[in-house]
Image (cartoon, rainbow, N blue to C red; front, side):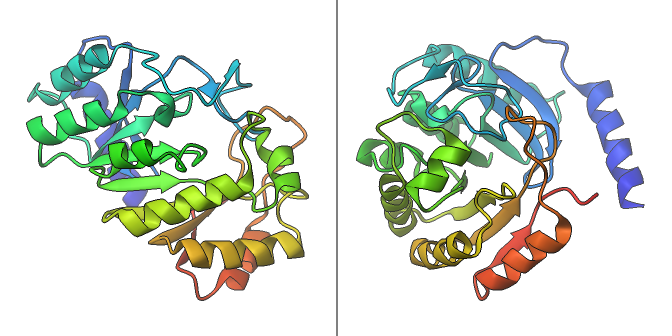
Length: 264
């Protein structure tokens, strides 16, 4: 019954969605975590601070930590305003900053968030981030008005971090963990920490035990275990099995853990 209702809703979206073509706004799409999500692409395709083995968007073409206005903030604001201001468009549960790169690299993110909260105060905003820039005090101030932040943490030791995430050379686990802890202490909204399990890389006993200690210190609202759904950049990478994810969830107890990986 639930699947039928979902199908009906998708047909409704397809039938009523605006004919306008946007460059930086996409959807709305149905998200397992966010419900109906209107996506906002903040940077050119695969501009990122990481080159993760599991990324479904392909290999990173610009590996950087430089925050700048990659796309004019006014162009992004105009497109979101146009969509949300059109009563014919389906109302999203969230406007989500994400897309095919790292959204926090955009230096105008705070301006865009502030504008949307002022013009559409009832519209919820979500941010997907790889957490690499959260050690930046200004960035954390930029994102505090979001209703939901979904950062990721795929490793807690640098050796594993470099295997899973292939970061820009200046990034390390210590900085990411410090930034996550700082955000958790300052942020008043929901913080859902995603841990992407890559079998044979970050699911060893020692790494899982360290994950638990580190995440306990960060104190997120939720911990979400995920794994491969579609092929990533490393075609040899496999999805974690349901039983292995369940075992990791048990070892994370009493942290508030849920498995969000698609069940096969």
